[in-house]
Length: 235
Image (cartoon, rainbow, N blue to C red; front, side, top):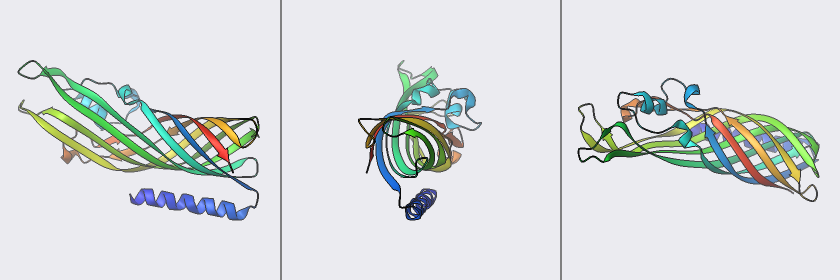
């Protein structure tokens, strides 16, 4: 939470400074929906908890791609001039992936089931370099920093080293920071006040996990692509 607070404070100072430095500012607000696409199996780092669940001696049956899921987001922007814009926003993503042990079953023949759950709330500050006509179409590229408040859990049945099957609830959470790269396009809707937006945003972040909590990894890779479709309103 300290990292999240520092990130928000730095972004706020940048926005206030930018507004004070120029009288020709155009604030805007945008909301969007879309999807999060996590980094695949081959690109994830050693020690990642999902990799641990897939390659240990009693592997689980799921795919990293199962964590693709929907998201919502909102962002406040301040543009000054025609080509420079600062923004701060937040999003919400949550996904539950059902799983079973790949090679083991209960004595009664039923599957040994558990739910893998990941939730992320990224708070992000970005700088965009914008080009084009706001009344028609604008493209942009940008970069920034994100603080991702995350929670990961494995809830259900588990198998111990001695083969015993028991109910278990493993939970880890924290805040991870990292860079963000983005690109997008805005299409004016009957003028320069409203616009339809499409944005791709690559997030880089890794959360630390205490292995003493029972997980098969000491980190969770939160890196992935956010694809968002939204509406922007300029004031």
